[in-house]
Length: 337
Image 1 (cartoon, one colour):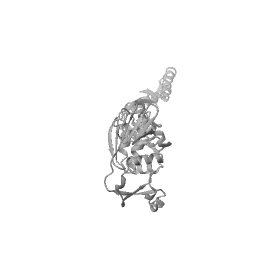
Image 2 (cartoon, helix red, strand yellow):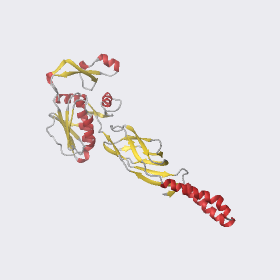
Image 3 (cartoon, helix red, strand yellow):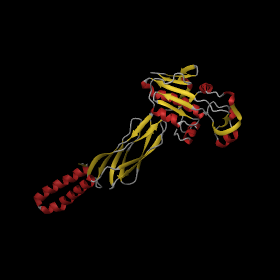
Image 4 (cartoon, helix red, strand yellow):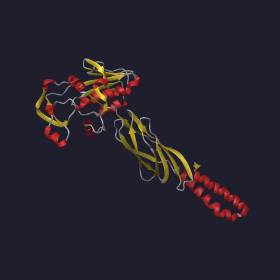
């Protein structure tokens, strides 16, 4: 606990009053010093009784790099008091997390922008509490943290890469084209004969028809690893292929040095959650259908029998975002793009 600049100024007034009282008598002390002393004592008592609040955070949804979300802080305390609060942010998140608040009053919010892949911790919350007159302040830290997941980027595959990926999971002639299943949004590489033009005209987006296969589609194995320093590149390449597969209705079994996860068609969230936390290392399954190997400078990908670099299979630095058809599909499935 210490005095603010205003409190120091008032203390100077008290000292001046004492000097004046010595020259002109105690009446000057009563008129000037006593009210100031009472104010300082009351301020100190108010700040001393300001206990650290119980903090409850409303965190934004997990999402991709460059997404922006809102963190809302509920500060519950037995007694209300003004304070300046600052929520600790990790390197992977950016934002101005300092705000003036009334502890025990209305919640306060701030914006964060996701920057790097990973599980990032919000908090703890530090507070600078002061009395209503702004004379005395104290600093404290409230316990409690929360976290958000930032997924790896998911890149757009080129047309030729989409065809190669289709060859890996080609269902052959067993798929019946006479039994309709559902409509979905167009994904690059879909056959134009499957476009449902009436629905596309209404939605102003290409909509394609999905048919019921005679048998379950065989799961495609995706395995990823690499040097320790290339974890982000490993996760980005693995996410690109794994998500492309499940969005095309193909089940995926993904293995990384951090473990194995299986996903059914349309279930991209388990894949993204796993890859958000995955660390690089030795490739778990070198015989997988799709193998990602992140080296010191280059990420190579083996699709079936062909090996090439990841950069040759994607379109520039383009990544899926909120305005992409695939991104809208992800949001409907509970994944923020």
